Length: 355
Image: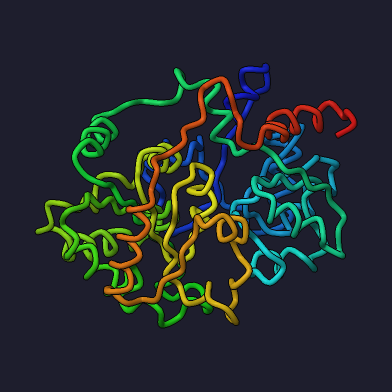
């Protein structure tokens, strides 16, 4: 999205909120595509930064608080938020938090139908909602500029010729920072039932990928030590090298995706890659029972108990039905064809066109 706008002549300054006490390293900066780190805990600092140090025409903010949007509105700067999650429904925590606060961005960009419908139903609406193509398709237009078939990706492609590849995406919050995930995973990183299934299924090649928030946290070393201790003797598992690889590129290559309740479920469905969801919160009667409805309805999300034998059975059933990944071509964005690119919405918003 930012790259597309830069190609159209806009100057982009990328900043990030310090999500941990530890300054993210340069590898993480490159991975999340930011230029600098800022910490602005008070409203007046927001105003000072916006008015005198930055003076932007538009702020594109992901996950910032209502004081941030309040400060921008005070000095007349337009604000826009691409929704970070996918498959959001009215019962989700994100929707509950955003639904009643006084200050919201002027525009929300969403990348799946369910999230767009949910935000559009908001009775407190004082913002516009636009459903856009997934950002991956916009980057595909500039494929020569951003895709690098590095050694890790080349190795993965070679692996696919001889075995099935399974991607496991981890999540933050199970270590105690989110109450609704409390006491689900004992070590806060990966459930023992999934560990048992990974260890026993040596006929597959497994990739374990951490969440960007986990990579930036001050306890990341603890997380990596846990993964190393669980899988350092497993030659069929890579739990160390793919954390910084592009998630969408990985999803175009793997045969199956397993997670607790990550929004990567929707992204995987974009490439017709089936996900196994293990978190009890996804089950009927629980907090996220209505999440990822599109993926559920298309059979691209299979819920499974935290039991290694059930996980094993689900893997076999899904892989036996797997027909391969349907890759979008560089020039034909057939998925979400009717929706605009995010950069197109942003450009229209900047130019005060009717959007």
